[in-house]
Amino acid sequence: MNEILKYFPHLTDVQRHQLELLAPLYADWNEKINVISRKDIDHLYEHHVLHSMSIAMAVNFRSGTQVLDLGTGGGFPGIPLAILFPEVRFKLIDGTGKKIRVVNEVSSAIGLRNVEAVQLRGEEEQGRFDFVVSRAVMPLPNLVKLIRKNIARRQLNSIGNGLLCLKGGNVDEEVRPFKKYAEVTPLSQWFEEEWFKEKRLIYLPLC
Image (cartoon, rainbow, N blue to C red; front, side):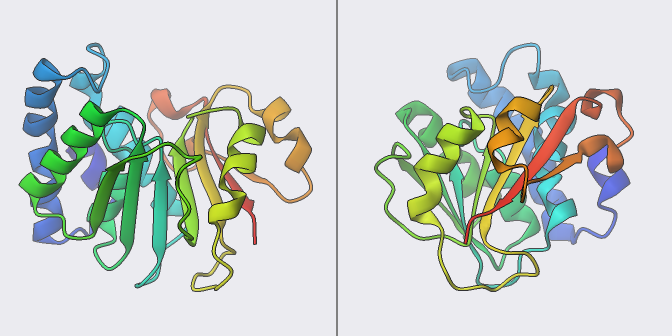
């Protein structure tokens, strides 16, 4: 939790409590269903929670915003973002049912009321959202092709509707087709921990 409070010191008591509950919940579920790699579970807050919350450094979602987390896995980045933005609606989808079960159980255990988690593939999702968020679920061109149908036209936020995607390593080739309007931000701009050195946030306006 110290990594979180270091960068998000103004959390409410409710938000702090919800975040504190994540470690024992994921440790317990990971024993039953492997949703986080065994070597990573000890770094849950840095590698998963804070990584997910980096999206909040780029945009402060306004009340009423609708966000789709595509390929959420065990609930990242959706659950940490839902904690940060209780007035925003999040739909978390994944093709693997057991992962969605974990998302629903964790969301319920910490009292999240702004999360809907459904077993669904991206191709099947027909809803419209202000933003799609994801963590490296597929190559960027494929992801953009998949989600264009899901971007709403209304504008609520300080940046245009589109994709906020977390990726690691060199992203130059993936971004090349979108270089005229893509914004690539090194997470090391916000976080000093070594793990974030090769991590990027890619924002693509798609509306």
